[in-house]
Length: 338
Image 1: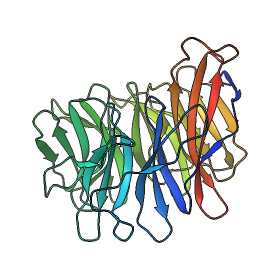
Image 2: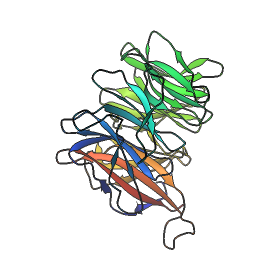
Image 3: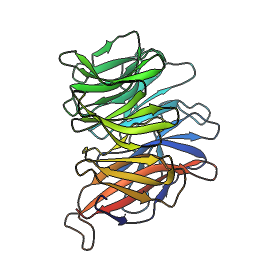
Image 4: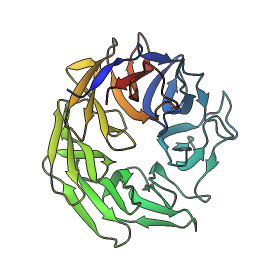
């Protein structure tokens, strides 16, 4: 088993009120958590909450200009940019979705694309490029926005693309391409414009996420899914876990440093499993809750100076769980002894 201590405290709930929480994503520095919230009788919205060493603060709605209680955008797909702001897409009943960004707790979100340009499911690993999807539902293409020039290039195909993820070099993009109800995993080199299928077969390959040079993703169909990994060159395929829960919309819960991944097993919904990608060891974190899903994980920086009696390393874990009426959101800090 991975060298984990017991959780340093019980899982702490985030105050989400009367609504379903989903798609939690921890900031790379562990200071904030972004998530979707579907309030009763309202469209889905994106919130952020500051996470301290004590109780999480009150969540803040990333409210778009013009939004009121009677007029709300449908906002989805929160993701963290390395610069510390949140990316997401939003739309109303009469508009096409486009991309926005905002600092947690800061000013109103700002549109990323020129007027009339659509965009969903943004991803970035550095300052030079933003990768996202562009096109009508079922015909989405991979698109790239150059940060310096603002120019957008769309790579058109006759099929639909999904779930882009960007390598740390900002050159390689992993994504799913949907074909005949299934999907393959591909990698596109943005410099050479070449692409290669790295995972394919009779089952679906979905939701890629980078962990160093490895690509982690889900493979399966229906209610049967595994967590797998493969290299950038399509070699080294391995199954890390079988019988995992497929999250509602997010990819594998890979830590920003690419060393840890978290998942939930379909037959043990009260636990979150944390896997060390270097050692191959796995630990089960029992939460005391039920219906856990969508874990996200990040290593926290060490205390400076070190705190007496505290573990050498700390990990922050967030996940959703089944509440009495609504899906709830929780965070827990875990200590590593190495």
